[in-house]
Image 1 (tube, rainbow, N blue to C red):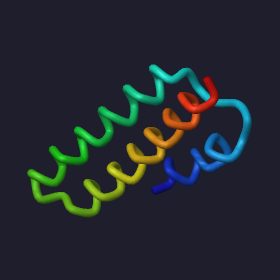
Image 2 (cartoon, rainbow, N blue to C red):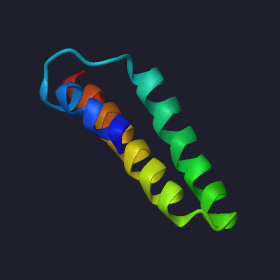
Image 3 (cartoon, rainbow, N blue to C red):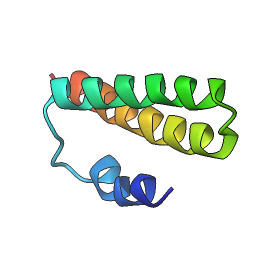
Image 4 (tube, one colour):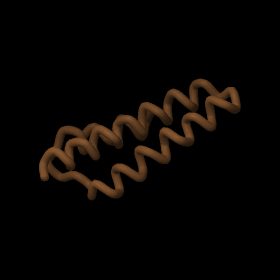
Length: 66
């Protein structure tokens, strides 16, 4: 959850990472969340899926700016 809190300035601010970076990071984190869930690591899965979702929101913000 700490990494998700660290992304709040990126969500709010004008400076955004490239869309490819945000899409790849968000997709891979969500994929890892599914893997953690299959291993029975529920808290880790939810935590990483929230972080992945935030990255996908950042990607959507970059895409809307284009």
